[in-house]
Length: 139
Image (tube, rainbow, N blue to C red; front, side):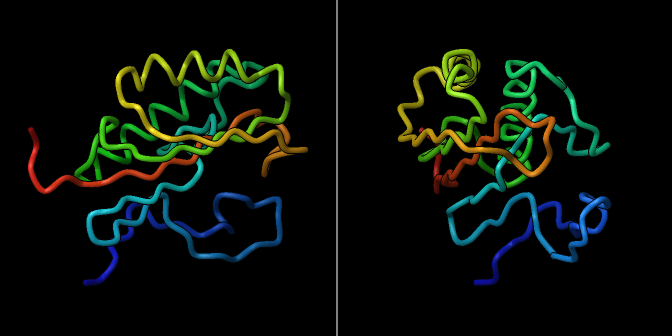
């Protein structure tokens, strides 16, 4: 089976200020597994950063992106199995996890949280990476 690439792009367009030329996708469907690119406070359609200086707004946008991408892949938030959260400041943990908790109530996924020095752009405060499945049937 060929992997399905969702929303392919090149880093030349996404990061014009950086000397990059990589072909990526926002999501890859391999079998019944959905691998999402780490999502940040960026509108996927306009590539504009949102919520600059506001970690909760960035987390909301990241979760909205995750939901939209999963929908495009034939999955949904309830099918998430693993999330990795990257924060640039440990003080952002509670507000980000509260936002995620609203979106993922009752999902019972596994997660890993990391504090990192920086993300790809200085205005990004949080990045959320998710893996999900596409169930054969819905209960």
